[in-house]
Every structure is written in structure tokens, then in C-alpha cells.
Image (cartoon, rainbow, N blue to C red; front, top):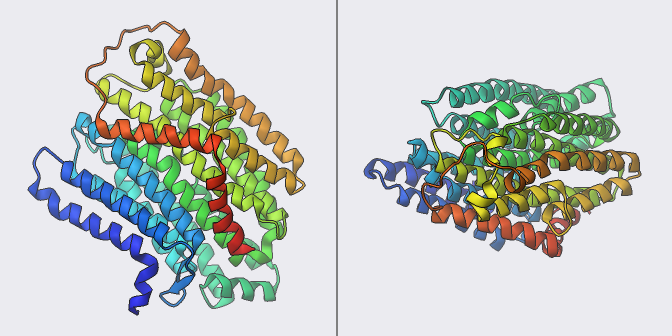
Length: 486
């Protein structure tokens, strides 16, 4: 290792040092955890700024296991933003739950480091290390409310399914190493391409796809998602719904376009089939949910289906990488609108920590009790539906256009139809908030906290700005993906 090797991982070093500092400071703090919140938030902001400062550079480190390029920078900034918004919405929620501890913020930081490594890795071993760092941190976050049975159940389910998924992924990696004799993405891809698309390559492709399918909640490997989201602390569920998913897609894009280029015709068909199945499962089950938290969990599965359609289009599009750029744009748009929706749930839970259960009936009359919360929730629901003027609309427009461009118009039609179906369960929330009388009157106990208000305001602003001025995000996606592969 040389000093030059440290340059590509400056954002990660900042987060690791901040995470260790939080653990050191925690024993000296009493009830007030402001210092831990400040350390975590500052580290995430500096990490994101450092990543932006490194944009435009092309550098490999640690014997080509980690790279610095605009593709990695795009995701590092996105992960830092997701982590910062999660940190902002957490303090009041954790205080209301009686579990405001510094370890929580350290785990968020370490999870972001793992996600960064997944996006920046160009070696299967480095990718797996990042995957496990993210996964182990996530298991602990899911069970952070350790005195609640549902939180323990969420952590156990997440751990068991995650362990199986990791083992399956690792087995696929071991097959790749056995066939290629190396774990470097480009070297593996060249070796497999020279050897042809045989049974071993097909099996390795399927195993890695299944393992990553668990991580991103792809049907039929989605079973853990609604229970984990419901049992985990709401800010953690918000983080799970965007961070690990984006990291999974960042890794999948790179792995399948480089390592498994030889089996491109195979995995493109698999992604198309799984996209249709995932869209169906996510939307069908979301329709029946009376619990908003579970509804958002199933809706996140549906959005994974839309993204998988983009991956299928990418496999069919040859050297046209617009589908990849559209996937990156959609991930950015989805991050802000979904974090915002969960942020409203976190706020409502802090108002009634003992009784609020996220049921649809509890949203009745919210427009009168808390107009600003209802308006913001309406904005996020509109964006998730894909209404014009929001980030969700622009994201779906680019994503579905890329599918059509890859001569998969029928798949785009299916995606549009499922998106129309989703309007029922998203707009139903708005109907309850503004047009239904509450069965029980819920009094507002205290005003919203400053950090949570900042998180919601930033999420809402991002949804509106991306919806009205999408070019800056699209340009970043083109610079990071199109320029790299083009």
C-alpha cells in the first residue's frame, strides 16, 4: 500500500474515523446525545463534499481492487445524502423510543462505508467485504429497539435471510474464481468471454443474481422485507429502503456488465422476467395493506421491479447505455421521495410513541391535525405515484423511455400499467388525510424537532427541484455511467 492508495478512499476514511470517534465519545455523554449527532452529520457532509472534490479523477488503488471515478463518486454522494437525512430524522424518534445511543450513529456510518465500497469495488473480494460490512451493520440497526419483540424479530429474519443470501453470493463468486483464476472484474470478464458461455458461467450468474436479489428485495426473494421494515426503527426502515438497495444496484450494474458480459443475453432475460414478477408482487400486496409502513415496504419492492426493467433493457441495448443512466437517475429520485415518506411516519410516531401503529385509519383527519405533515406526505405520495412536476415522474419517464429504446415496448407498457395501479394505494393515503373523519382524535403533543424538520424540508425540496430541473442529476448520471462505459 502506498499513500496514493488512500486518495480514492478519503470519504470512507472520514466516515470510519467519525464512527470510531462516536464510540469513544459515547461513554462520556449522559442523556444529551447532540455531540454524537453532530459528529455523524458532519462526517457525512464532509465525506460527500470530499467525494465531489474527487470527481473527474481516474485512479485505481490497492492493486486495482478499489477505483476512484465518477461512477463511484455519484454513489458516494448519494449514500452520504441518504445517511445524513437518516441521521437528521433519528434523534427525536430514538428519544421517544428510549434508545438514543451513540452506537446507532456509528452503525449508520459503517453501513455507508460498506455501501461506498460496493460501488467503488472492481474486485469480487473487495465487493464482498463491502457487502458484509453493510449487511452486519444493517442487522444490528434492524434490532436496535432490543426491548421490542417486533424489532428482535426483524433483526433475526434479516440476519437469517441475509446470511443465506451472502452464502449464495459467495458460492457464485467461488465458481467465478475457479473458472477465471482471478477476482478482478475486468480480468474475470475477459477470461470468461474467451471461454464462452457455458454451464458453469450460467450457474455462477444465477447464484450471484439470486444472492443480490435478496439484498435489493427482488421477488421471489423479497419475503423478509415487509416484516423487517415494520419491526425496525422507522428511520432505519427509511435507510434500508434506499441505501442498501442503491448499493445493490450499483454493484449489480458493474458486476453484470463486466464480470458476466459473456452471459449478457442470459441475464438480460432473467432481469426482464424478474422485473415483471417483482412489479406484480410489490403492487399486488401493497394494494391490500392497511399498515402504511408495510405498504411502503411492498411499494419499495415494486420500485425494484421498475429498476430491474432498466437492467433488462441495459442487457438488450448493446452499446447504448442510456438505460444505465436512467437507473442511476431513478435511484437518486427514489432516495429523496421515499426518505421523505418515512420521515413523516417517524414524526407521527414521536407524537404518539405508545399508541401510534402506522395504520391507515390513524391518518384520517391528518390534514386538520397537522396540515404541513399532510401536505408533505401528499407530495411524497404524488412523487412515488409518478405525478408530473415531481422527481418520481421524471425518474419513471427516463426509465421507461430507456426500456422502449431497447425495443422492449411491451415491458414499458406493463411497467406503466403497474405504476397506474400503484396510484390507488398511494392516493388512498391522501384521501384519508384530507377527506376522512378520524375515528379517534390524536392530539399533537409537541412541535417537530429541528433536525427532523430539516430532513423533511431537504427531501421535499429535492423532490420538487429534481422534478422541475432534472438536468443536473441526469448530467451527473451521464457523466458517471455513460462516460465510464462509453
